[in-house]
Length: 312
Image 1: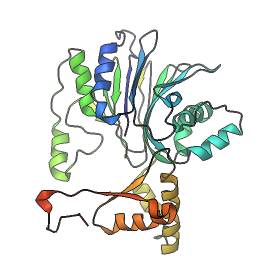
Image 2: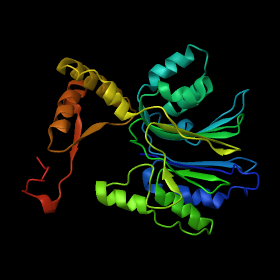
Image 3: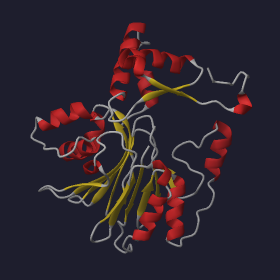
């Protein structure tokens, strides 16, 4: 769980980005990144990126973010939250096309993948992610969120600049730092919360702050935000499914997914509930990790001994 932040002053009359505002947004997400933090502000102050790091893959300082990459086509910069489970396969493919790497991180793979495919890069990704990539050559900011919306991405657009963060409260902190008024409550977001138990995308509890929907990208340039582009739809996938997979196929898919999830430079375990889903995943994961598999179960005094008690 990392935290990402970005501010892009795209309007002709937009003031330069305030470093204090970018820092305030990043500081509000401190709990998301105990392993480090970084901030980058372009010389012309029209774009700034920030990051809170929870190191999972390539723990070295070389993999710190925001990560910059200079090449003849112009500078790219990225702030990224998540994991790309097929990054090793993608890296091998890119290396075969003479892309050179200086880290072992999945973050650098994203930069090279953007150089290779542009916004179509999302069709090659397998993972949970939210990221913002600054493209100096095209003078634009590219946002993307994973197909199932596992990683959050929120943005606020005032018609002159756009601010992006992993949490709504971080965007509110940026407004306070800029001495801007707090946005009004969003009725649709509150109604959605009481109806469904969560705030449905793209709504939030505040007017003017939106969630980038799952499986969606957004391009912002000097003309402002372009229409969102959906590259994945869960409902369409379910409709296209001819039939349920066989037990053997499902077992193979789960094992393959688990093998990809265990690619990390830190210990990876399983979070247990008392349900069949986590127990099944633990059984399959133990085939991969053996007896050294770490598990975690949370118990609460208020549920002790009752039907909701998940302690073994």
